[in-house]
Length: 84
Length: 297
Image 1 (cartoon, rainbow over the protein chains, first blue to last red):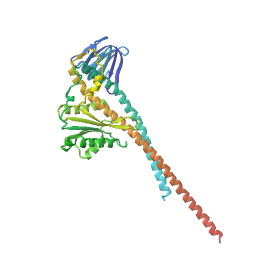
Image 2: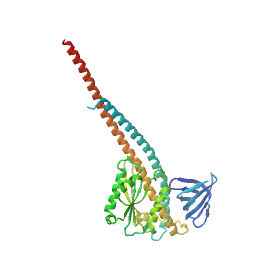
Image 3: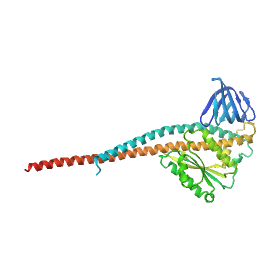
């Protein structure tokens, strides 16, 4: 499934992932392939992507929103505090 | 007629000014490209955010989004956000914005203005300077925003305004900015920022792509969180547009100045040559006259 992580300043990450861990505003959750359509707000925490090409990527975010639809994940974050 | 040396000095000074305007034009061109890039980079975020909001409100029963920011109140206290630039030398760019914002305050919001309830928030030094000089009420200014223009700094300004509106310190917020059309053209836009004007035609055309979303935590809460985000993006877009327009306006202004310097140099060179020729002719006449006088003896 494909994921797009974007901020208003620039796209942060775009590519294929196996699984994603989100810091949901009501607790963390994971999204795997063929997840049902979902819209959720995100809280402060770590966004963890298990990418196909670049291994595990982690981003510290301070909230945002995610939409999951037909194996397309869009993550909108206002600011990425740190990446690693 | 001016002396040869005077004309030569003037030509040199015009030429060096021309060099400066030429350099400024090129700097602006580079900055304009960067500013346009920023607009393009911001677009996917704004589009996705709108799509999510539309998807959400499509599944809403009455299709309308309600929040504190849509609450229509008697516009007693009005805030006008005037987006100008930090630097001058960009034609009528800043004065247009200032003129429009002062007109808006004095005409559309005349009663509130008379009661002293119209305040200004200026973004950019130029706007701050001239609005303060007119003795109008300024509640805030963000002057160094353009040094390092990113969403983080705009977010702060946006949150300040949103809080003031939610706490009922403001009833109406308008934004005035230059929209970038092309390098030579800027369009002045006056937009009502708060309360949100609901675009009902737009929400209806969106086919309700009923995807049966799982909503976390709940639809109402998500909407409450997304609306301020979308408003901040709207403000950010206005500032980015204004930034691109500023560089476009400066580019055009500097291009005109360079052209003008060119024609000045041309005119001055003509004067210079004419003066020089006059001096030569005078000298020859003197010599010839002298020789004639000697012949007669």
